[in-house]
Image (cartoon, rainbow, N blue to C red):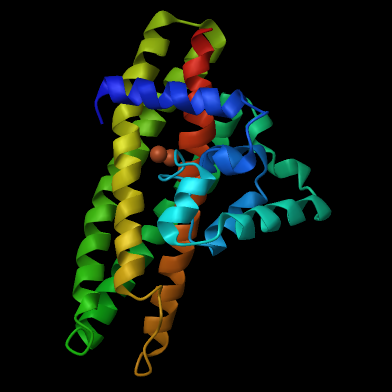
Amino acid sequence: MTFLSFIQKTISLRRNQYNFEMKQEEQLLGNIVARDFRAASVLSSAGLDFCCGGSKTLDAACREKGIRTEEILEKLADLENQPVIPGRNFNEWQPDFLADYIVNVHHSYIRKTLPDLLFYTDKIMNVHGDRHPELKEVARLFSKLSKELLLHLDREEQVLFPAIREAMRTKSPEAIETIAGELPGMNDEHEFVGGTMDKINEITGGYKVPEDGCNTYAVTFRLLQEFEEDIHIHVHLENNILFPKSLNLQI
Ligand SMILES: [Fe+2]
Ligand SMILES: [Fe+2]
């Protein structure tokens, strides 16, 4: 993504974010979840990507997936009858607090889970790879993702998030410049991670364990599915809430 296309995308995201008169089907998936986190489960269960695909409108995303938009609108309307969880209103949080939350919850989850998943994806590939050759591709993709993701977390923790904290404290032009310079690369890396997990999901048939799959096979697929769900929330919090808010710090 070029810097110019990133800025254009951000402007259109912001326009969409603050247009409360807009019909829900015309709103961006990322903004629907940013305003009401309960919508995440509705969109996820319909296979609608609100993190890396968060800049698509609900209507466009439904058409792409061959889903009736009205069906999703009805489910979103039903959320009004469900309890709100006040502690999950991420959109209200200050950027520094949200950055701390992301590090403590999502980054530590990834650092704890990656070694287990690398071990398990390798193990099931060695045991079942001859009968299920897709496991070789799963292990290869996950190993590549693991290396890229660890570098990405380090860069957020060592460069981007400190700049966000600094920009909030001092409005320093250098910190604001660092944020603007970091975001396009971060967005590209999110697309790579989200796209890789999409591929793993696809080639495993949605993490479906075959008849001859052992317990380790089942555990690996369950962990991979959890990992993908966590990545979706994590990337959503950054792409749709933290990053747009960080760009606003200069105002
Ligand atoms: Fe992150
Ligand atoms: Fe990130």
